Structure formats: structure tokens, C-alpha cells
Image: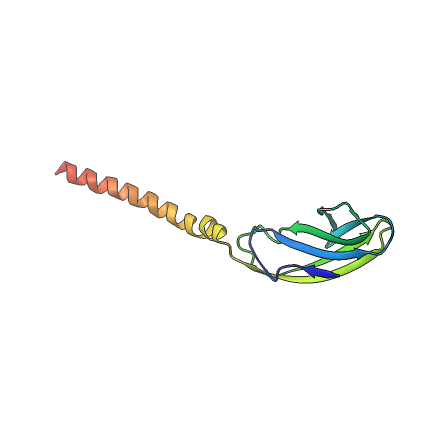
Length: 130
């Protein structure tokens, strides 16, 4: 079994969970992938005989002010609900460029821009009066 999940994810970006697992059965086996107890959609519906590659995407946070690390428990369960595999991951959250611009720079730049436009109009109006 080979698995991958990133250590650091930018805010509002998807993190890819990748698992390569082998089904030793002679027939396909249905399964579910749960993340912290919630079922997650994957790229395949069942485990075919042999090696299978399961991928799923998860968004750790949408909050632009959330920088706390997140913990995830990924569980692969068979059709009867028994756990086939369990993985624990801690993910660090970093500020994304989009969130920096949208939630940190624009809220400051827009009011400053509006003030500068009105001050510029006021200065021009005073100069025209003279």
C-alpha cells in the first residue's frame, strides 16, 4: 500500500489524497472512503482485482484567517463497513496569494483609493475656483 497527502496546503485550495492498494480477491470489491467520518467521492467505484489507484480531493479550509493545522483520518471501508485501511495526516495551512489579495490587500486598498479620488477632485475644484 502506497499513500500520499500533502504536508502543507494553501487556503481554499484542494489537497489530493492518493492511495495505491492491491485487491487480492478474484472479483471486484465495493468500498467507501471516509474522511473524519464523512464519505468522500473517489475516482473509482470499486476495487478491481489487482492494483488500484484511489484519488480523492479535499479542501482543508476556506477561511482566510484560519492558519491552524488540520488533522484528517482517512478510512477505506469494504461493502460490509469493515475498515480495510486507516491513515492519519496533519496538514499545515498557508496563506494563498488569492486570499492575500482578496482579504488582506483589497480591504485596505479600496478605501484608500476612494479617499484619494475624492481628495483629488477636491484639490482640482479648489484650483479651478482661483
